[in-house]
Length: 219
Image: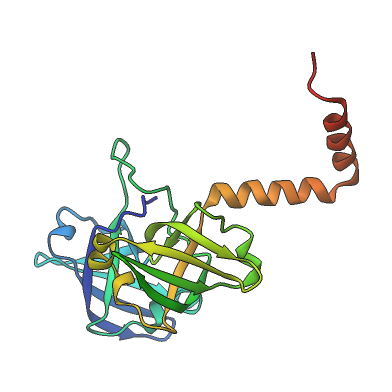
């Protein structure tokens, strides 16, 4: 599990394409201190497992075909910068929101403009996922926990506003129009929405809820 607080913007120093997977090597530097084989690391918000670690801070990960297809990790190459967060420990401060590292979908940057000190990014997301994106709610964007600043359901887009610190320390400050990002919707929001949908699709449960609403709170 992760907090969505990016710990480092690191460089991809190696990419090896094999038959069934791609192996990447990241120059994690001090972020690799005491890292163990099998540890979980979020790379652009995608939970990957450490397969090799060197004393010089280089860390390797294997990415299977499914992850390459459903995330933006298939687009990276040597020299690419990626967001990295190591899994949090019980007792650590959770400054963002709890994220699993299981990417929901990718979204494309379709709008970019500066508003004072903020940079506003607008993303085009598959409509099936937009019901889980709420104004002032949270989403993980390339592993960064970001508050949603606006939602346009007709256009199937959402926007986020970045402060200078986020622009400087994450991949989000380096995006160009058309670039893809990994999006993880808030799991609590998804659970609530899907539960309500199931209830409303059940005639008996829907009738019971309506009857309770009409009768008012119990004395």
